[in-house]
Image 1 (cartoon, helix red, strand yellow):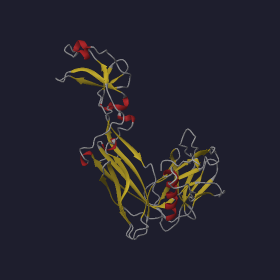
Image 2: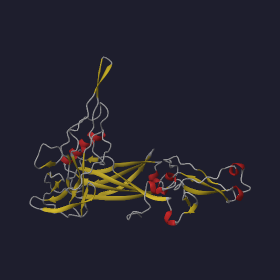
Image 3: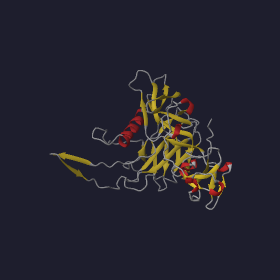
Length: 389
């Protein structure tokens, strides 16, 4: 979940074919509430908790991290781990390797002196992901997950994912302008091929409670359209699976309905979202979040362009085009009239430049395009991820 927002509802009452709007004034009564996201990882992986504050719909920003807090993990009698703030609002610790026979909770002390704690909970063991796969559909890829619990004790699952892909810019450039002249790009200045990534943008839940066996079969995780830049060269997805208690599942299901499935009169209606985190000194203060305790299972797959239908064509997301950058007529006496008539123009500093040639591959001039069409670093990084293969 990338953000939790409050939804203000405008209700229309239709009487005798007349529509009368009821205006609900914006209020700050429910703004600045503490939002807690994450899981106490009982295994060897890191525990990562994110703290933020709610903002009004009318606010200019949707990101409001809660910084400088003190967060600890404790059992019924002692503290067993401390989280450190790594970036604003994000706190992490190394693997805690907890005793799964004991109960644990999260304790948070914010910079304003308030203390919050989650309910004590026994770690829930998550079964492994059996496999990740994909189906070719009429519109692209459908990534899915398979898993099962032979003991039939899981039943409730939550998923998150992180996508990573390799892509290149629309045009490759070997030159750059410094404002007065053309310069050759060095290998270190190459900006053609990059990597990019994205994370879960919605709440992904699955329940096998209605099934005779605790089996997850081809449960859909995310779709990728056939024209997406993500699958231009090589695509990878890391899926994380977490077992939930029934109470945790109910919390996330209500949250999903309140934030992702509202909009029409036949959609799910707003409902209260009761989490398991409380102000230890003021039980009336609303706090948003549910901190589970348990293990996490992960699996990654790679998909290359050669595995996909050849008929799938990439859709340029920027409508990239080129224009004449620099022409030198005296050196190309046999150039066509439209080239000889072109003015000598040097594009602004930073614009991407590359040569164009005649039928005999003789350079007869230079073209340029806007940076977003030739500089992959504007939306990605040249650094290859350490897991990439």
